[in-house]
Length: 358
Image (cartoon, rainbow, N blue to C red; front, side, top):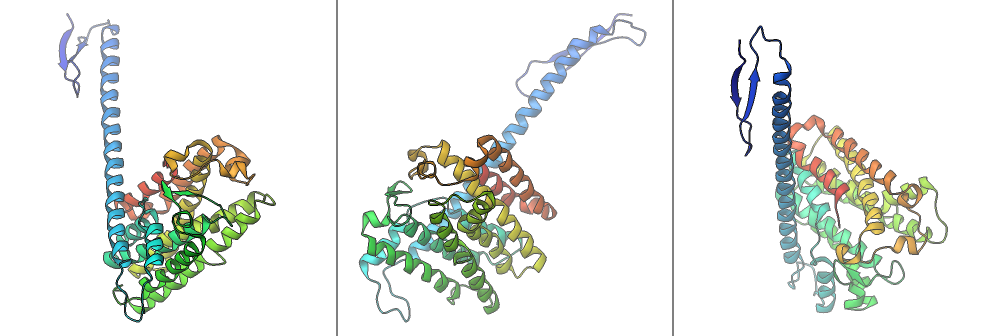
């Protein structure tokens, strides 16, 4: 019996694929092999195209969400740093306020506030309160950048593509701007406009103090300065980075649980998630310092190598760093697996941190 012929339409813009189906008694099995392989290739190709399109769509949606949140934080910070004195403030000196605004209202991804708002959203926390806590955290982060750029520390002239505060103003004003931003962060948390119970505000103040102070970011900066004179070993580098960079990112994720009044288990899980992506952030930053240019980064690059500063990338190489980054993303995603699809944005944030280009 002659083989029958059936036509199967492949998805997409492909032409139809004809399959030759032999009769039950046919012995020419080879008649179907090439068409079957062709159909398999076409279907697989279209499936891959659909998966790629879905991934691109997810990435695009995530970046839009990140931008939207950054816009909200920028608008809130602009209002908080207005030239109107608050109750019990005597006056807001114009030059100092201008320097504070210069150090804060200069764009950026606003990643740390994003982590606060998304961690709170995961656990059903107050969105407006989360936005204010995110703004407070951004004040702490920006204070650290203003001081970090000073000649006594990293001595940078460029930050986010514009002159640093001590270049745009002067050294003394930059120091005072940083001091004022740090103290203002705790004002924002404690203020009645932040609609949270008193015990949660106290927990946030304590957690942020520990993340920003001698046992966190400030202490990490001290270790970083010391590392220019004596290169630390691998454990020393990891500790330095966990304090200088990771502590505020850890707080950002833990803050969402505090805002939400979540269980101790949820708080610990989000804290650990923050630790993982904090390590990933610094590792990615060290890679970018090695591979990116100043125009892309909006700040000077290659300074770690020039100063002989020890980093994990310098210690183990680029390939190790990229492999380790992938592992940290998997671990971070695994921590949130129990939350299901609700954790999708935070999981995508971990990927973004590891794969960012600036």
